[in-house]
Length: 496
Image (cartoon, rainbow, N blue to C red; front, top):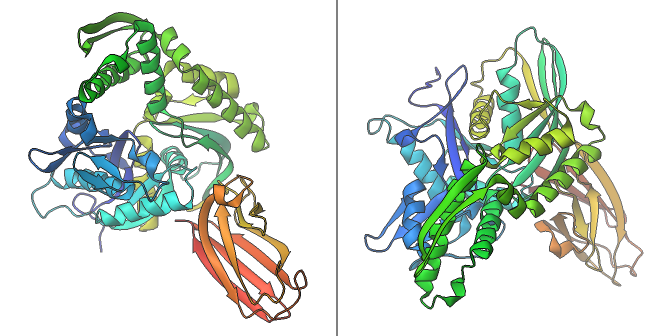
């Protein structure tokens, strides 16, 4: 069947912490949609109690200023907690449900650009941070399916950005070998990924050689720190406000102004902040400079410098080995970020021919075309990844024993030998975890592999051989062997 790029395209959705965007594969390139004239849509949900309906995007954000108890911003940061309930007035939802509502609204917004019944995407790819763990990936996948999307797959944001860059420059006779650093600083997460791109006449290879980041570092943190800085400087005492709603409204009004001021300070040296009645009888009317903003977020800037330096070192390369830096995410547009990139990676390396706010959605659309075999390329495209988080098991003392190390190249295969720790033990549960904490249960639980039929022996006598295999697909193959009992159990645990 001929690919219908207009009415049934494959699409990519960049599901961001604060903003989202969506692009389609046209057959030649990735084109970003602009529903209602907006290419970046706020990832915000508001519940309107009076009319018993949900509002999304910028309208939701603005409605939340006067009713902050009815709005949720930054739900992506809660995707690691399956138990939390988000209160929106009288309603309560899980992070997966809120994310599915955002995804459905994005998709509906595209459908509404067409006559009724005309538009129906033939497949969707949704993006996630590289640093997401297995349960966060699974929750994102569940949210997409709950939204009714025909999910082709999940792709990490830096890989998507690299796709957008790599295919933008791909030519039939092109030969290249370059290292790019994808510097992804969004509203809620910071991802650094170093990717080697090799291209010849027959092949285009994306090889992840280094990863780093922090899933609790982004524009939301900058907003809060700048707001706290202003509160202290202006001497605003929110605790003096007796009515809780007035206090919350005042903070939300100030936050709205702070976000706008942060964006202004990305291109100018100063801005005026004016907030009438931030608390009853007190107004803010003052000038703030870029220096004020940078001072307010200095602790985060230092984290960014440290993570950047560590990621380059852990990849086994030097800053001089990085050929280009691809900036991704709205917060990467902050002026001082260019200085940090220059300090850590060298001067003149930032690639500015793609939009940091849109390239992830574009790359996701390209990946959707790749998965659906609609990518018209005369080259064989390959992606070789690295393990973002160590994979291992829990030992008898509750410690985390890693088999596959963080940053290890895939495909990876590692084996360790354990013993039973009780007399006459006939069954064991092998608990698989993902993370870097010393105690297993402080990490993300991937799954349990139960082994039965062990022959009863004194403790420490039976040797349990555990093998982990990780490929490019989002799963780990666990093989458990015990020769005396004839055990050879294989189970595949999904990381997504």
